[in-house]
Length: 359
Image 1 (cartoon, rainbow, N blue to C red):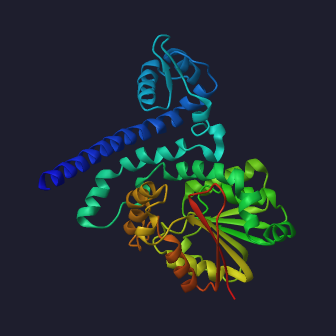
Image 2: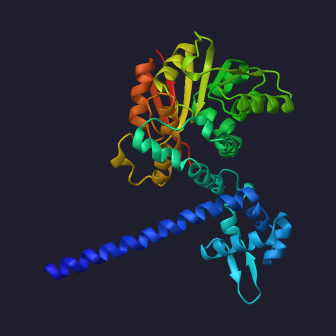
Image 3: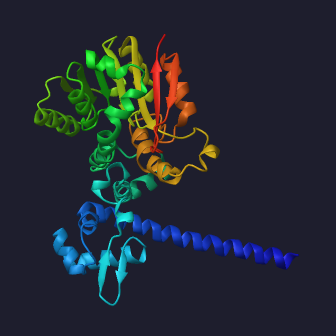
């Protein structure tokens, strides 16, 4: 019996070792996936027949030696097919459908960029494990750009036609003309899309990022929008009273230093009959209920390496990415919302859609 138990234990150990090797390979492939996205290699290969490394490099406008080594990683990782006799490589269309910019919201290569971004602050996060505190937002120079790219494709595909209609009667009210604010608007793409779709309504985007606000204002100018403006404002100190009929946040609450004050300010800024649409990370507040979440390790890691730590760096609550439905409902109620309706969108495994109103 003892010998059998030892064998079984060893078997379990070897199985874990094999799994760990898979983790190490997958981690490196994630980094190479990010490189493939940022350099445009996936986009170039999607339109090419089986080609040599030189042909692929020329199509993408890149250095052949680096492309050749990247192709080796992608081939051994099962992303790219290789003909060893012809020395050619091809990206099959069924894989390109998840890796190219033309895939829109299905482009998972966008998400791989977080691996390299978070690795840049690993030393600082390790220090926080030992001494507490956090890593400030300014240490993540590309975070907003990646978020803008990530959310932008989703907003383009679903914001006007899918997300806003989740609120009964909202498209009609927007067509008639109401006042709308997007809190934590980032680069402003979402509110510009709304302003473009509903010219009779008035829109304002609030954020603390000068670069994000400038990007939003520039896009509005390019589109010729006259019904949208951008203001620098701390989400925790909105200081507005019954000014808006609709307020939106898109993945902007959980990483705030004081999300409780943000939600209270949003509640106060709504007019009677107003609606708060809070789009935030889907999940449970209970770890054990997230075991089957398809992106749980990814989201908890982003929380540890970004969302939680930037909040703690500002002396905040450190709510974390996976604050979850239960905590969201609790905080919305404490902020003064008396009705919270949770909705989901088909195909969106990342977000929950909270529709909150006051009595």
